[in-house]
Amino acid sequence: MTTVNRLRPRRSCLAVPGSNPRFLEKAQGLPADQVFLDLEDACAPLVKESARHTIVDALNNGDWGGKTRVVRVNDWTTHWTYRDVVTVVEGAGPNLDCIMLPKVQDATQVKALDLLLTQIEKTMGFEVGRIGIEAQIENAKGLVNVDEIAASSPRIETIIFGPADFMASINMKSLVVGEQPPGYPADAYHYILMRILMAARMHDLQAIDGPYLQIRNQQGYREVAQRAAALGFDGKWVLHPDQVAAANEIFSPTQEDYDHAELILDAYDWCTSEAGGAKGSAMLGDEMIDEASRKMALVISGKGRAAGM
Ligand code: GLV
Ligand code: MG
Image 1 (cartoon, rainbow, N blue to C red):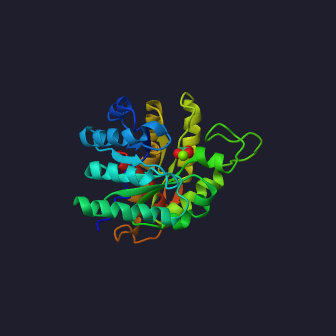
Image 2: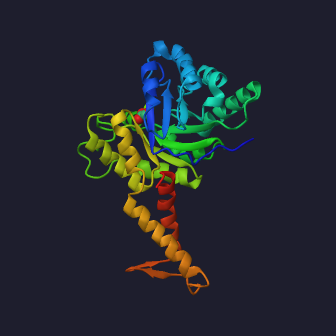
Image 3: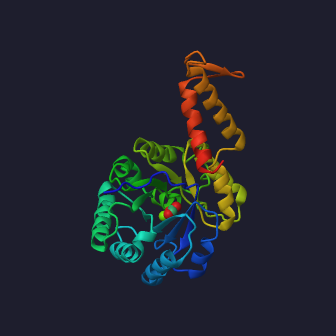
């Protein structure tokens, strides 16, 4: 069994309704790191079945230009999930990188998808284990079980926060997804985001923030994205072409931070070398750097190199 690639760039994850060939065409030309073709909430129940075939056609015949290609299926509490997976993976498996599973509540739901994928891959003669899984956390049960979900399968690549369903499921008093609920004096999302981030990092997975629905409010999008990026999230959903550039920028380091990180790495390499005196720490301007500084610099420089800096 091959292992999935957990380090695919996912700064911007573009949502595209699977039932709309025009949007599927347009998405191919946008500079998003990832696209996900949606069979769940962006697809009306009446068109879910035909959308499976529209998606297969778009994956097989579209030019996705190196983007990570994901399909979001319906969750296991519906009757659609297994046919979503069978139709899409049998029809376009080699042109698909991951299945996104929404409203994940416990590890068994991921394991069930993993088993189904393995059977399809074996039956179709596809490479076994290549297709990854992205798990969306969208209710209290999913969040409480997020550690077991993150550990549930070698196919898992990311844990995604789904704020809209999550806010509804815990009765949060707000209608504006991602914005602070009126009346609460602090950041109402801090615990949720950190909980997801800890589970993801414990298992070496990416953590992705979900949608911001006020698509005309660029400033609002930037603020919500910056909050997740500051904590350490790897990327965020984009629902509109205007949000793509903002996500790519916010989830990449600034040029200044990237250059600074490279300087720290060079200075640390030098001070620990024989020629530099084999010291454990050094001064870089007014800043003292040591092994922990090197680790922090590696994070920024890794993100910068992935972003092509
Ligand atoms: C995404 O699926 C959300 O519910 O926010
Ligand atoms: Mg949702």
